[in-house]
Picture: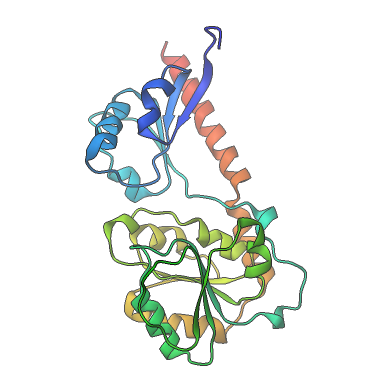
Length: 265
C-alpha cells in the first residue's frame, strides 16, 4: 500500500486482526457470534484492546464481549440482498406449504419440525440444506431435499407460504442474527422462528414474523399457513433491512467515529 493507510478497516475475524489493524487509521470490529476460549478467544481479547469501534450483529453478541474500556458501538443485524430474493412474478394462490433453507446441524431442532408436521398433516414441509448422514424419522409430509445453490433460492422460495427457523436451545443460537429471517420476508414468506434473545429483539413488531416458544411452534406454523399475508407487505418489511441500508448505517457510524477521533486530537 506504499505506506498510505486506509481510513477504516472492518474486521470480522479476530484471527486476522494482527495484520488488519496495521492497514487503517481506524479499526472497527464486527463480531457475529459469541466467542469463548481457544486461540480465537485470545485474539479477540487482544483486538478489543486496540479497536476504535464495534458493530455487532446483535445486542447479545455485543454484551458478551469482554472489554475493560468504553468503545463506541452499534448493533446492526444481518441484512438481505433484496434484488436477489424478491419473488418471481406468480399468482400468490400458487404458494403452498412450509420450507426451511439452511444448515442442518446442532442448531436445527428436528423435534420442533416433527411436532409441526404432525400438527399439520395436510401441509408439506420441505427441508433444504446439506443433509446429515443420520437424522430422525420424520412424518410422511416432511421431505429432506438436500442442498440447493444460492442462485436457485428465489425460484424455490416462491413456491411456499411460510419459512421456518426451528432452533435448538444451545447457546450458539442465542446471539445469532439469521440472514434467513429477512431472506424469507424478501421472498414473500411469513416466518415462524423459535424464540432466542436476538430473534425476540429483531422480530419484535415485524409484520409476518412470529417468534414463539418451542411449545408454541407447531400452532404458530398452522396459524401462518391458514392466515396468509400479502407478499408485498412482507417484501416491504424486508426492504428496511437490505445490505444497502446496512452499508449506509455502517458508513455513517464510521464517519462519526472518525470525526470524534479527529476532534479529540
